[in-house]
Amino acid sequence: MAKKISTYGLLIALAFLFGFLESIFPLPVPVPGIKLGLANIVIMTALYLMSARDAFILMIIRILLAGFTFGGMASALYSLGGGLLSFCVMAVLKKTGLFSMLGVSIAGGVFHNVGQLLVAIVVLKSRSLMGYFPVLLVSGVVTGLVVGILSNEIYKRLKIYNVTEREENENDIEKSKG
Image 1 (cartoon, one colour):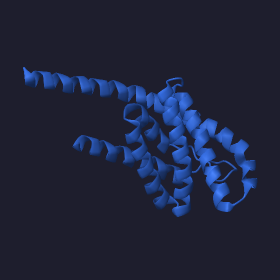
Image 2 (cartoon, rainbow, N blue to C red):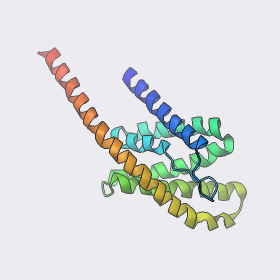
Image 3 (cartoon, rainbow, N blue to C red):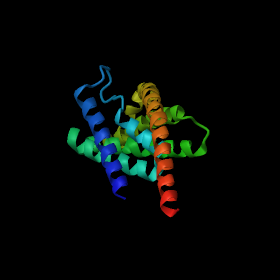
Image 4 (tube, one colour):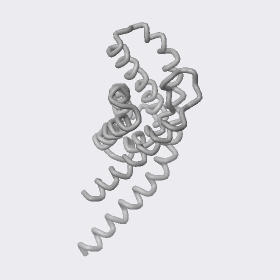
């Protein structure tokens, strides 16, 4: 249990750090609010190395911490809308086994933007915001691609460590029995 708590803490801190870096180095794009989503690297990797439940908890904590630290209630609300929709889509696509991590990440990037757009339409009571959809679709694909590539590289390296560590733990258990 202590190991799980320390892993949660480490991953939340890492995601928080990535969010902080994005807040001080925004992307030079003409559309406000578009971010690379580096913190999602942590969530994507957790989705593949841990349970969906664990990754979901990490995502919620990260969004709330980052939202209130870097943006306030409105920022947290938009991020939560995007994060919930994107996570649900990613978890379902991963579970089907029909999509690679890259495909799951791209879908996550697109649906994160869709979720935020839906929240904005409800909050601002303006359907005219749908005009942003083409730009958000392209940015979701691009950011999802970048996050997916980086997540996949990290996942491959951590998976080797995780399997090796699990085998060592199993060997220690067997030795203690014998």
